[in-house]
Length: 442
Image (cartoon, rainbow, N blue to C red; front, top):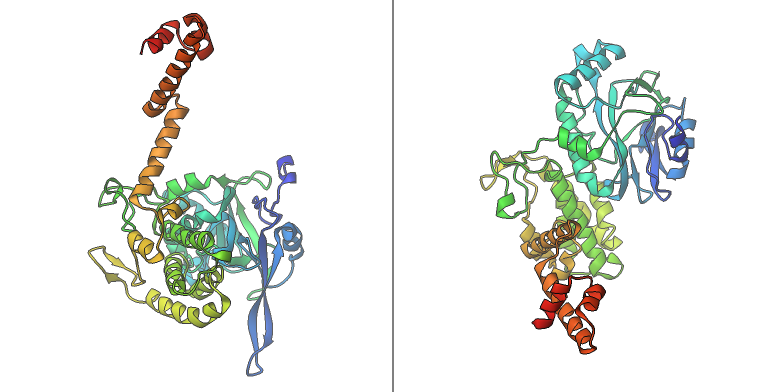
């Protein structure tokens, strides 16, 4: 391990840099056999959260154990939920190659070669690591540094794109959420008693291949983005043939709206708990955003987790199961054509303007939002950035220049009343003597 790594939180089983956040959590998950309701043995997954500082010791100690998993993300609460994600360290694809009769006949060496050739031929960045979990393969791309929760939407979209790109290798379509668990390296898969092992490593253990997240997104994701449920300015409105930044896809937009809903509750209400009258609105809109980001099989638990941050427990227990069931049913429905936007999921969709109306977002609150903002607020931010950029370039705005000139005229008049010379005035104000005379004459 390099000297630089000695002062970092580091994964001893897979060479990736972990978040440097002592307050974060991860989970160890184990498959155990317990008696079922009918007395027959059933397999359950038991999950235990731990603080990040124990990561290295616990994953190392897991070596040799059977059916032991670890969360792939790190959380700001001791619960493995996407809405509690604090940081993510990599992109991934879970390949069930054993489901393909042809691929199942190949050994690990052949599969690695085929995967690397596929990456080369398809202009996909080569993975940082490939693991064999006893059956199938995990492929991962490590980030140079962990990414924060705000990137959850984009990171989910990356995983979904990787599933599409590796569909020929039986990539698991469910393995895209940021709260995924995978088997720990050096543990045993009881289905065939094989160990989880690294079969390919890009770079070395001390210097593995890593990727800048922004650059990876720009290179991997397509930049022509279909319709999303907000209405940007006309000159940013995507149409056929136009492009938008890759990171602003569907998942990114809906995750940013979800973060705004959470922020709005925290800003507006004591303790961040939404009062009666708006609870259904907050819960419904938040759930609709989640339905566009997380897979259907984890939606119910994620809705409960997000609602628990701004709804009282009794309301969440009574209303959310019904709301989640309706959303999951719609997520599993056939794609529909709506308003000429092409075939899309029948999950409820709302324009940005409509969501702002339903939530009653005030202009002062918009200052704290990232997605739920009006054209006026967007214009204000553009102007603020423009002025900041011009200041950095040394350009003085006209309003500032006029104000400064007025102040200099007052100061020149004051100094002249004390019989100060133009040379002395110019020296004090840091201007040319001719400018001092001009200001005195106006």
